[in-house]
Length: 291
Image (tube, rainbow, N blue to C red; front, side, top):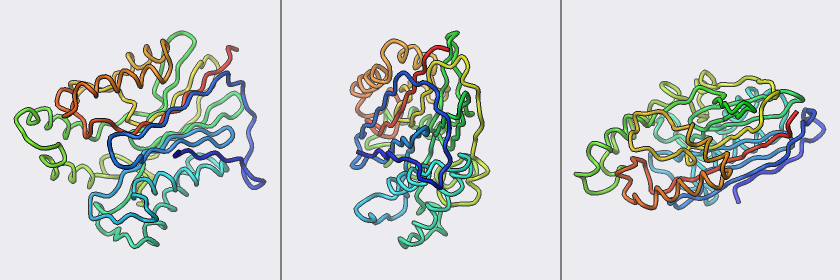
């Protein structure tokens, strides 16, 4: 199971814990050969990581894909739980680069590099510290029924999925076969048009992080893009209203169940444009006692 659990040692920073009434986790491999998503719980720190393997010729290292190694490396770095989350992000990015170099990856060519997105939260007394890069998300739900994404969401795959919506029904083969050049173009835009941890110094420019008070917060959810609700129109933003409604009705499991039902009915990814039938999923939901 791709889940790290760690207790901070004497060199790591300790925080006061608020009262958490429940923790839900979800980790599931998609239709690919490897689950490149990672769950992390390290004391009062919770995170998800979504690795992406290079598009160039990639040789497994220790039997693992580059995407899985990038996600695991980032999770291991954050598991120390010391210093600010942004500092840990810098260290994780550096460690990914060092691992690629020691593994013989030619990082001069951007299609060769490994990468990971991430969404991490840490409970600090009556506040929540958060960190996000890439398309993994952190969501806060409030007592008054409202909700907010803690970081500005990105949709770097929008153009690719819109193209697939146009040509999928009249094409044979997969989206990867038909739109390989477009997919490579988007990957080349890492840390130019959107951010990921891939060892490049420019990744730091795309880190989003901050703090929010926990007063009035009922739930905090961090999740990878595998838990995004499938949409018929890729040009529209993620349907968070429906996501929140489903979560209130049945937690992460109900959200997951609806996603898989939709995907099962669209195996060629044509009605709900996406890259594969089922994507990997990693998610953690924290529920708090009422104040």
